[in-house]
Image (cartoon, rainbow, N blue to C red; front, side, top):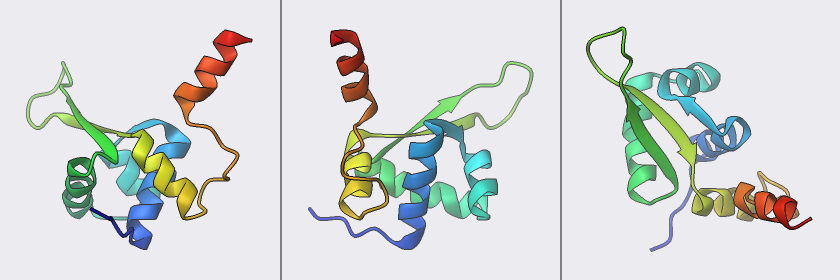
Length: 102
């Protein structure tokens, strides 16, 4: 199944690639978006295995867990295909492997 990225999707993936891991609240502030509508879009991207969304409990606080967002390799490939990341850029794991082999 082919996924067409909206401008918002591309922006989400680009910010996730730049920051590696960030909370939904941080992502909402950076993008100037409503956190609730952003969560809905993140769920769609997570179902497509483009990003990971993980819940993290904050020990000192009760209530809703904090959600962490991280880019998956297919999301990085989409960014590269649409020109938001240079074609020469390597996925982090590839870079780590190259460093270990040097």
